[in-house]
Image 1 (tube, helix red, strand yellow):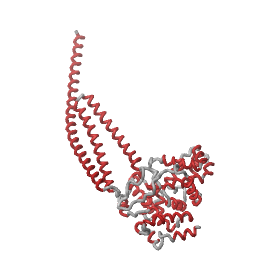
Image 2: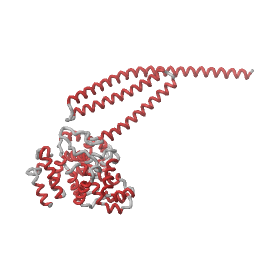
Image 3: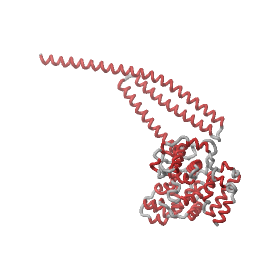
Image 4: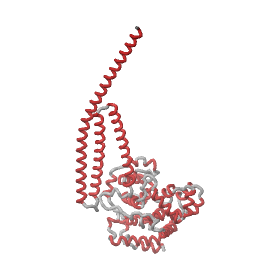
Length: 457
């Protein structure tokens, strides 16, 4: 029973004799558990959780730090904090109801996350995702940051496929699971126009804090943190399935969303029991393939690419937008030079157009070389890479970048000389046009005088 589970919990090596100190320091600093026994103790914690339904409140922060394997990188966190407020969080006080010291801590947490992963600052919703963790580790800004970053990188690993829009593939997986386990509910939601982006995404993005009381939210996350991140989806589908009668009675999408998103009276124990049963009954090919849990590593900096899909989807998309803008500017510039060449009929103008095209190409080459240089530097810092290979790649990238800069300087000098020739040619064209205009006007004047004399005669 619950009393027996409580007694077992207090007998775990995780807590014996050092609980007061453990409330203050990360487990990585305490050395409470050798690596070979950590997995066994995690399993024991899950067993205790199955029997008692939740972890004791007085030990939850310690247990969560153990399950999340928070590294306690104080110097890395200090470096992020020293960068100050992130520009994306400037209007924070206008969006949040917190104005106290706690509000300041939340603001610093959001800025640290945005500095760590700029992708997180690209859209709304970050406050709702991390506010519960800021409250759970109230007063411990290091643990609040590391817990938030770890949860976002693992349980939120599929959130950013279409950022800053709802994740289409993730919501399709939710719909498929719901159609398998609660087909009547899935059909009814579709018939009334309740899209998963309207009811599933707010629950996922807030990690259920939007619909739960703080105590129930903590109990739910006891179970989520004790299992692999993909367990988040069975928990969500079980939540929707247990609201089935109310959803089937909903006559509109607004009513269905209100049923799921307004404070829920659902008891956590039967909900989690239903989630475990749903997970066991889900075919392997229906459950999405998520990456297993990966903690933040210990060190003096946090890896910038832990949030999956960030660079391959969103950042590439932003780079694509910038590339298109650059291409448009290049096309306009070439059209302008071509028009001037056609108007003036001068070889110098056409030469300038070709030179401008070559300059733009060299700028692109230099950008690629700089990108390769940054990648090489990043690989050199990776602990799992070959130092010699990375150093060689770094040196090669630096040589390419230096050569690109030298070629750019030489091209700039040649381009300046061609522009001077172009300006002289254009001045000559304008002068020639002026002389031709004067000749035409003189001829027209002579013709008018001749006509006048003929008229008088």
